[in-house]
Length: 336
Length: 140
Image (spheres, each protein chain N blue to C red):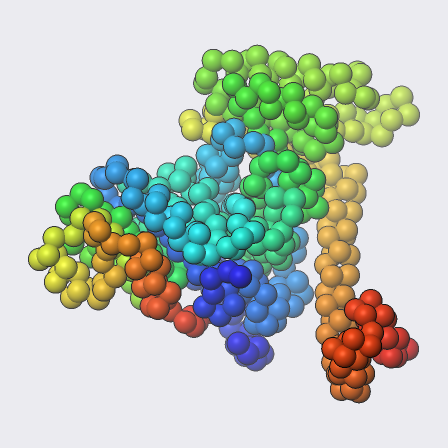
């Protein structure tokens, strides 16, 4: 599929900015599929769209993430905000297929202000799709400046989400007691807020109490209160993850959860952390793009000069080995 | 490796429309399509045609699979096709599975729905139909 010309790109960007859902959906696919047209579009997107505010959600299956995200999006939408939900599910490493099942809990009526997209991991690690950062930025180009990302929700996804999100909500629920044990290890580092969902069920208070006790025992937790702790005694201002009870199904506690996240964002902006994270993402994207551009150019050069073909023939003839062959080709490409 | 049209997995939304809670069949289909290398968005039960069209639009699906066991297959399919068209999704391949009486087939045919799979259809038949009829190239 060929690249797009400048006029087509202009038109696509205008339609995106105007909030067109069709063009946004197609653009996500182009980016996800790594098509040349997707790259053309991304160059425009990165040049014009700011980083959106990204909130990640993690926690094991059954905690209610798939109910929580649409509910939170509806609360943002009710304030007039345009929101995107990106829900990631695993691809089969064997067939490449996937069942994306995060929409079954969403019972909200269609709302132009909320865009919901399911993404398969397609080989991405850490519970996220490889294209997630690009898709996040694309949402911003479509006027959606709040992006909620739901991870696959098991194992190491908590780590990868930090590279994409400004804040992470760790979701749990009563009756998942063993899960609380498992989360202890890294909980202070990952969670901006710990949400005990299904607060209407028996055991919610106990689950919240257990989490608060665990948090209180974490290193450095002494004398900290939930949320923002202003600088004192030589310590800079710090954030201590609050434990909140919410009920995604009824919406109870959602405004309090959003208020905590906004408080955290203000804290990050004041401390410079918000800008630092954005810059770290830009730098990572620059390096990734640089790698693929250099690779493309170097290979084109090696083929044009015939070095690649010569070495490859020797590899076929058994006169060299793959490691040596690669080094020979690399050495033959001049880098000024 | 994966099922592709232009180097990408085919994306399918499968769901049930209207008041019909029999979801065993649609779940079997979802897994079979996944195992055939497709990305399958399972959108659950009791959806309205408007909700379904919005989901197909947001997910950039190539195919919509409707499971209907309620007996109202013609009106539900017609309303869904209309909802898709209203969103500019004329190119989405609509496939219907479930209980489809013979006289209903003629009516669905008039709606342009050719992929109809009743009891006794094999999974291979359904997968083959989708692969052969999925839209090849879609505009931005």
